[in-house]
Length: 88
Figure (cartoon, rainbow, N blue to C red):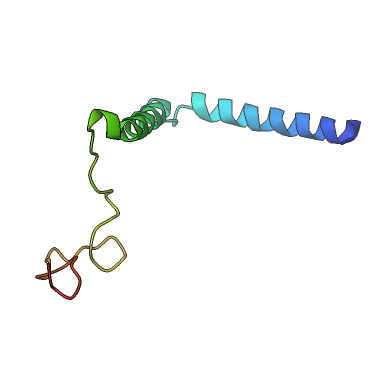
């Protein structure tokens, strides 16, 4: 990449950095919520990775419900669900 390419990348990164800073300090920004959410996700991922050693079991993800495939569960489990041909 030539000098012009480096200059373009530098300006683009400066614009992205300035936009990120503006969003973080905006009155409408929920910076605390975003930071708490990201740290919570990191902590959960770390605990899950350590699960075989510590015994931590986070359970099934919220999106892993039975139902229509649109997050709308039926709320009724059929007898023998999860088994081959209804046989345990």
